[in-house]
Image (cartoon, rainbow, N blue to C red; front, side, top):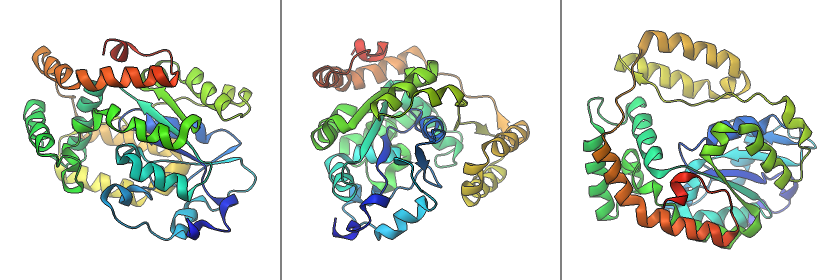
Length: 308
């Protein structure tokens, strides 16, 4: 906390903390359009991620460098969905470093999120291209039973365990209280204007500005045909991320051209038996989550949560 002394006015004060594959990229893009919100030059800064692994943070100046150019905007925004499963260690670290910060948590049907995460890590060449979803789940469950699926080296197989939201929510609510806003992927996807307006109202920002926002979906996972070409494209995306963050239309045009040359049809959705397997695994976690959110006064639960 001492490292942040004297720079409190320059510190970020709005973070999207999770969860992965639950529209966090879209939320970051949408909120970044508000004139009173200054976005980081990169979406995922991962500054507080080391706290998940009991590692020290980098100097605060490294973090603040991503917000150079901020002037009078009320909020400085970043989004790192890997923060949420860090639980109390990350929540307390954020609260201690960024006093008064607010956090947004987007939740998604954990079964759908697991399937999406599987497609994501496959598209990033982090698991074998011919690995089936069922084999992937076998590996995830094995690591989960060992209690090692959340380790850094097993991150590609974090697709199953990361959906146990009820494990970490109490720590975040205890640390942040009413400075935590829960939204649902379902609402962000189907009614993005309404979802973003609600967030702006919670932030006490002008909601009329939302009327001029562009609501386009980003960060869809596509499967590749040629591994080397995919690796080259991923490397280019990493090197040019700052440029692409500022020039979204340029990136969308390039992505469309690239997908025409190196994408293939998405894999078939899992069988009913596999969905039942996921539902059985998540049922106790989802039921606990429903109770937690009800106790917090969160209303309008989506179908997957109401049935938990």
